[in-house]
Length: 209
Ligand code: 5GP
Image (cartoon, rainbow, N blue to C red; front, side, top):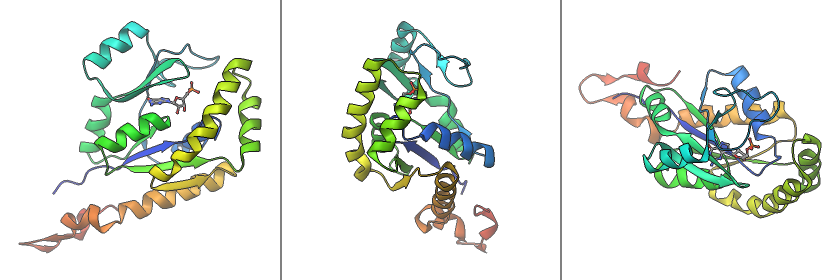
């Protein structure tokens, strides 16, 4: 029985710091993070193929038609999507995959891959969320208002997730996510087929280490 990798979906409203948390998580662990495609223009310092694949709307729509995406969503007037083939290939090879995506996208992934681990990043408070979105300084006044409003609505979707992690400090949030992943790797319903082999008895060496 070949073990499959974990599909770990990290999402939450804009400004909760999920991007920073994911970056720190990847610096300390050997996870593979999917690079999304987007029609949004690159921000200062963002690199094509590293932060996103920056593509045209035409190209994006074509790829939707070709069913190239695991999920996609329109977020604040731009399209964002997770390229499917790389993610499925990694999971099949037994590698763990992280998706850092918005809530609409996460719910779509949950419909198709209920075995995934769905983690919602919460801000310490709504006041702090407001501060974080404003301090980012990358948004126009109009875009700030849109992001605040949707963040208030989006918090309610936390009940659809498996875990909620408050991003009080990045260090603590990362620690909690590492613990969640470690626990998920030990779940009996994930690994029972690899614990016992009907002919050979215990084959514990095939478990995650
Ligand atoms: P930003 O424009 O600030 O980089 O991202 C805006 C939002 O889009 C964030 O909530 C981010 O997590 C989300 N996002 C990034 N990539 C994807 C993706 O592939 N799919 C979906 N559904 N959302 C994404």
